[in-house]
Amino acid sequence: MEYFVNLPNNRFQDPGNWAKEMQESGWHGVCASDHFWVNHAYPHVFVAATEMACATDRIKLTTSFCNNLFRSPVEFSQAAISLQQSSGGRFEAGLGAGWLEEELAASGMSYPPPGERVSRYVEALIIAGQLIRNNQCHFKGDFYNIDIANKNQIGLLDYTAPPLLGSAGGPRAIKEITPLVDRIEINSSARATRGGKIDLGIMATISEDEVKAQIELVKTVREDIPISIFLLVAVGENRGVREMKSNLGKGYLANFMGSPDEVKEALGRLESLGIDRVQLTEFYPDSHKSLTPDLFSQETR
View (tube, rainbow, N blue to C red):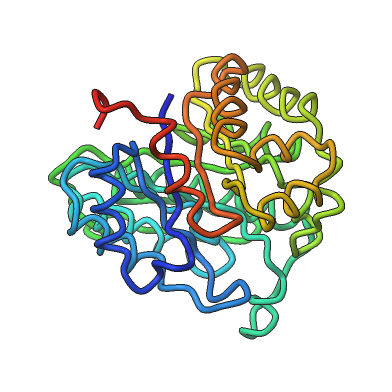
């Protein structure tokens, strides 16, 4: 099992040193998210990921996930190739459909309905896959018309092309995205963000059977594809963590909030479901630090 950690809010101004610390702590990979803000300002995803790449030499890096509604898949692909170069071949290119309505609307961008977001996303993954692997693309769809051919190309790689990662939660997205990517990440809380913001009430209704069904659908579409899962974690013995866990009631995602031993036990059960990588995003400050001693022995550091 691989464990990746997402750049936390309190280290947004210091992604390079944070990534170096995570490498020395024994984590398998680090991630950068793509937002303008979620309650507070975010660093640019590509700048943060490049700082991480330049400050480390072993740990894997990924974007979790670049927002397809922010930019062209051509720009995403160019950045992915550049990050693969900067990292010495350690980068994995994560592209997502986009979900937070507020930041798009406030920034003068359109926020399509769910069906259109998935359609745009599928087309963008087709384009990104061609560009990342071949540096060129000819594609005509409902949302994109790309013709990068002949002498035109977006970059040259001295390394193997970075793996293309996708994120999905709903049945249609899983069915259409799984064949296009090298790894798929199950978004366990996708149903709670489908309305354009996080809905804790909906999060509390997500069951283990629902997550199992997502995983089984992926396997039905493509049995050999590696599967990750996105999880919001709140780890500690304090009142704030207990309140967050209480907000999710008896829902499955509450298992990843609580004491280090409780969360470690819940994470350990994921491998039996067919998961080989977990992406941990802090829902409470310093949750990564609380987990590190429990997840990694001295032999793996």
